[in-house]
Image (cartoon, rainbow, N blue to C red; front, side, top):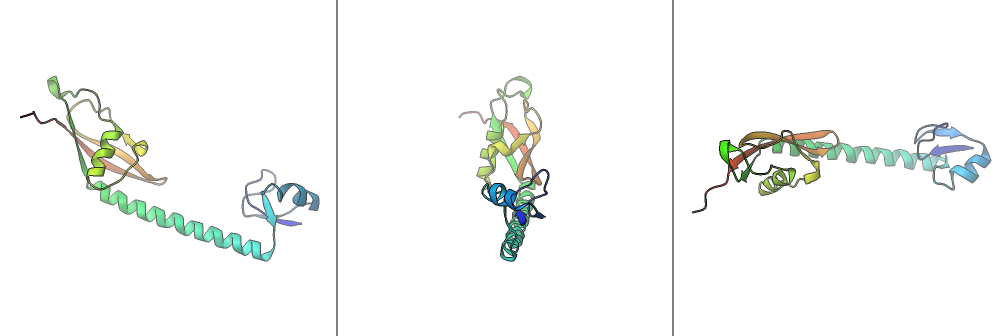
Length: 151
């Protein structure tokens, strides 16, 4: 019996492979558990079309992420912090501060995907990395300035 594997099987092959298995193994184990389908021409064509559309969506998402990364490269986030002696800030600048600064520029970024590259303890300019896509990471400048004095 020929079956189309829907997931990777250690001793049979990768997802999408058409393999020849014993009738009982295919009918009683693989197919009922959703690990394989009978390899008819319609099933094979549908699998190929599904894979083609999925790859097209992934490439479109990557293109969008690269465009957003280019846009973010020109953005400078300004964070105001309370400052003590020698321009040392109280506390630290966190990914939450960077996400709020990006939101002011109209860019939505998940704080969990933002990495502040340095420990920001002094005023100055630093960089933060934002993971937009599994293959695309954008760099954002973070400028830390003292809070303006209350008037």
